[in-house]
Length: 145
Image (cartoon, rainbow, N blue to C red; front, side):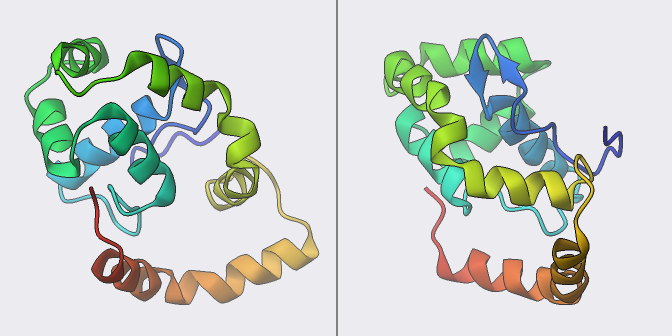
């Protein structure tokens, strides 16, 4: 398991049965500390899906996280908002592994939860040098909610 503070919690960690929320919280905190690195906040398809279903923009979410003492406080604040759709979020969360299985394999490889085979190792070796510029380009091209 990865224990580096520069890596957000794994995709399968939940808060009150809601996947992705812990990871998104971590990425918002990482951004606030200037430690987001190549991770995306709001620009990734998964972040986007969560935020839209939750009725919150990336900046609103980041402000909620920065103003909350812990994960439970973040969730309580989200639940108090008029745009929060708990049923829609839970339904999305329940389908998470089937919807994002290809991303999951990449995250687990990239973050060291799974050892790559020879072809995957080569792919990672080739991608790492361009990861920063690629994510920077994606941030400019894909609008965060």
